[in-house]
Image (cartoon, one colour):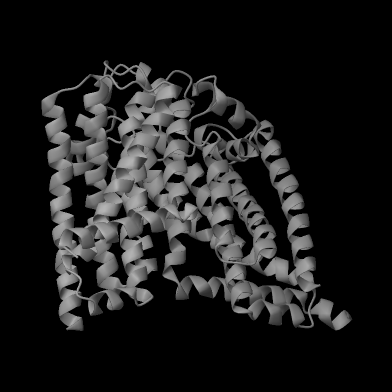
Amino acid sequence: MTPLLQAYVLARRAVLSTLRQPSVYLPALFFPLLIAAVNTAAVGRAVDLPEFPHEIDSFLSFLLPATMVQGVMFGAVSSGSDIALDIQDGFFERLLASPVWRPSILVGRLSGGAALGGLQALVFMAVLVPFGAEIEGGVPAVVVLVVVAMVVGIAIGGFTAAIGVRSGQQETVQNMFPLTFILLFLSSAFFPTQLMSGWYREVAERNPLTLMIDPMRRLVVEGFSVGDAAQALFVSGGIAVFSVSLATWQLSRRLARLA
Amino acid sequence: MTTTTAHTPAVTLTLAGRSLTRILRLPAALVPTVAMPLFFLLGFSGSYSSLTELPGFPTDNILSWMAPWAVIQGSAFAGIGASAGVASDLEMGIYDRFVMAPTTRISLLLGPIAAAMARVCLPVTTVLTVALLAGAEVPAGIAGIVMLLVAAEGIAVVGTLWGLSIVYKLRTQRSTSLVQVGIFVTMFLSIGQVPLNVMHEGWLHTVARVNPMTNLLRMARQGFIGNVTWGDTWPGLLVIAVAATAFGWLARRGLRNLTR
């Protein structure tokens, strides 16, 4: 079996194990949609504020990228959690006893997370567009948004995988969940930074998630531009490279301990 | 029988103390009652500070608006935490021994309630301290703080009884997720973020108008945005009384089924 095929088999296992557990994927779909619906109804009138970006007239369109990223981030926590479970229940050691290509353990799991992230992005767009969200960038923007969602799946999956490999404890990985929510809140995901003030605005403007979500939002509310697509892909890709390197390092350390 | 009844307060306090010890042994239990309310206070105030500029917003201080909401949220989760302790005891079989013990059943309900009421001190002190240091105002003074305390203790009792009614039925720790979702959704589908007159005239406006949490939040928040009035107080007290009675009945029925 070639390394690529091994990675494919493990990715397929990751996707199937998630799809067989509604308690894992349903909250990652339900809560972002609930928050989008509540925020649109509760603070939707904020678009009338003079400082609100004038090109945005629908708060739901404004929230679409944040909803996608939020759902993918929540779902990606399961990548690390499942790796920890594999360690806890002994599957990881059985895998190591086989002549499997070691990086395929991570590649498989993260590819599965990327596939689920892309699927989630499509579901969020399919649900929010009929309720009034408009994607001005058309099909090219949709393609970029799906690809960015997949890369975010890898990026967050990389962080949680690093924690999962290091701790070998599902509970430790799941404690990451509030942190992802906090990081997202401390960005422009739910409100424009122009309307924030003080230290909060400073932090939000420097949050890498803001640098990723802002161009995604422009693809939705303004239209397609190569610059925005490149920025969204570059920032999400950069985070993914960092987190996957972290996960690879942790995997090497665990393999060295077991050797 | 007389002896058993005489020991009820002692048993209640022992069970409450046992529940509170869980916080020391499991610091993660502080996340929903302290860390999350603090995050909601700072996160929502920071993100939505400009909402006070919308016409009809009852205060120009977003911290005064958000602080009571964060306290109520932490207090509700204090109740859920107490019921989660019961769920853990049920799963490990320890609760069977409590049920077999020669004591009144009511003390098994009152123990977690007392623990939740004590746990309320955590979100109240931490959130209020941070909010006041950051610039929140309480125009009604002590009366406003008292109203917030009454609402916080009330929602802790309701949260405990709601949690127990589910936990006694499902008898697993996982069931506390359902309890949390119930509280979380009720909190968000209310006037937590903005008042009714600032919302769009849509589905949330309709839901928030009939959501009992709206009346509880009005009672808790009144002293932070103006004066304390009986008109904003009695609907909140009524909500606490009705919800505690309804969930208390469910919890008691669940406990009775458990002991059969």
